[in-house]
Length: 184
Image (cartoon, rainbow, N blue to C red; front, side, top):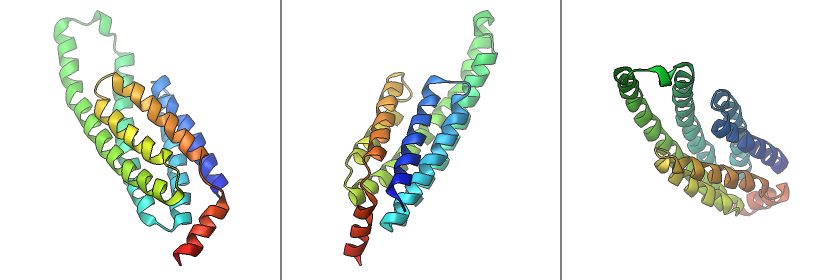
C-alpha cells in the first residue's frame, strides 16, 4: 500500500462527491465515481493496517449510499422534467404523495450508510491517528439525520470537506510499516 495512492484516491473521490450537492442532474453519476475512488482508498488503508473490518464496514456504507444516490437522482430527474409550476393542486398533491415514501427510504438508507461509514472511519482514525476521520464520521452521521431538512445539506458539505482533509492528512507509508512491525 502506498499512502500516496490512498491520499490521492480519497481526496479526489471526496472532491467528486461535492458534485452531488452542486450538480443535481449530473451529480449522481459523478458521485458514484467519487464513491468508487473512496472505496478503493479505504481498501488500501484496510490492507495497509491489516484490519478487514475497515473495508467491510465501508463497503456496506458504500452499497447503502448507492441506493441513496439512485433514489435521490430519480427524484431530481423527475422534478426537472416535470413542469411543477403548471400543475393543478391535485396533481401536485399526487406527486408529493409519490415522493414521500421515497424520501423516507432515502433518509433511512442515508442514516444506515452513515452508521457503517462511522464504524469504518473510527477504525481508520484509530489505526492512522488521523482524528479528522472520526470527526468527519460524526458530522456525516449528523448530516444524514438532518438531511430531511435543508440544514442537512450544509452539514453534509462540512462533512465532505472534513473527509477531504482527513485523506490528505494520512501519514506516510513508513508509518504503516512501523505499525505492522509493532503488531507482529
